[in-house]
Image 1 (cartoon, rainbow, N blue to C red):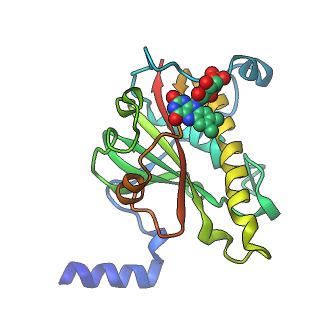
Image 2: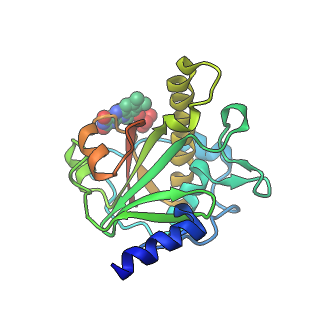
Length: 213
Ligand SMILES: Cc1cc2nc3c(=O)[nH]c(=O)nc-3n(C[C@H](O)[C@H](O)[C@H](O)COP(=O)(O)O)c2cc1C
């Protein structure tokens, strides 16, 4: 009861999004220099193969750089690494599953907010290589964030366009830090909604299993 009252009071004072929980992970600063040139990364971009999919664990620095490239702040914190319709804040979310649990990337704080401590890695992807990947990123359309668009038939297209831009940055940044990945559409969407604890208007688009080479 005391704990409940404390949580209610804390939410009232700080707001739910500002609260830090024990399982949250503050990411180190992303790598912004070095690595292959952008042209070399484009030239080498490719999906990791099903057989021999890389099995090394990503460290926090790898995750930091890849997530930042996908939808982090750039240009002195004023804008984002991917183009957003009307310059809005990101309206696709990125969930990360690892052996440590399920996390939501918070681009503002550059943190992983823990959604659960469950190891769900094998339960959403449908292909074996992806079930065994050390980390999986899920790109999820945040339709509610576009509820005020002038036309609601734009929402799905805007989210899809953004998800595509994010995925290409994920491929290129992963290439740069020695991580292999592959975009996969074959995921169990009902399980994704349940295990990632998605809202009713969230749309899981695809996953990107990854492993250190
Ligand atoms: C929309 C889309 C859906 C995909 N779905 C899957 C998938 O479910 N499983 C898989 O193994 N690869 C999937 N892929 C990866 C493609 O098979 C891969 O990109 C393609 O074979 C070309 O290889 P490359 O990425 O190395 O150029 C998907 C790619 C896209 C763009």
